[in-house]
Length: 151
Image (cartoon, rainbow, N blue to C red; front, side):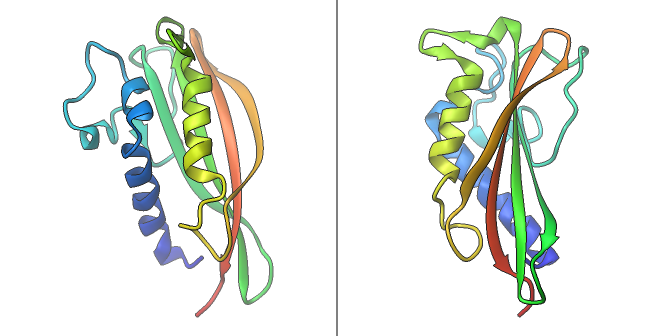
């Protein structure tokens, strides 16, 4: 991955997420969900690690970021795509299950095995829970792939 490719990768991830009816139906709240899916970006879908705190609007959020913790050698970069799924208590329960579970499952369907990034397929390397703020619950997902380091 070249640094100049990061914006393209972010855009690709956003576009893939916005194609999912499940993600669109779960982000935000029923009362204030934007009419167009693209309007959710920077409101409930963030292409960076936005901090959700106790003053944030109650709802469901999805954030992600791309990092390269290791350069394998001059030819290849080992990079990670982190997702943070954040749900407020009031919006956690849905008729089909917990919003954080449903969002995690949908991200998994989109990302795991994807060939849209790097040389091979994207693979899930871990997931965990976290509590970003009072009344908010979170799940983190980490995906790994390898890409060229140089042209």
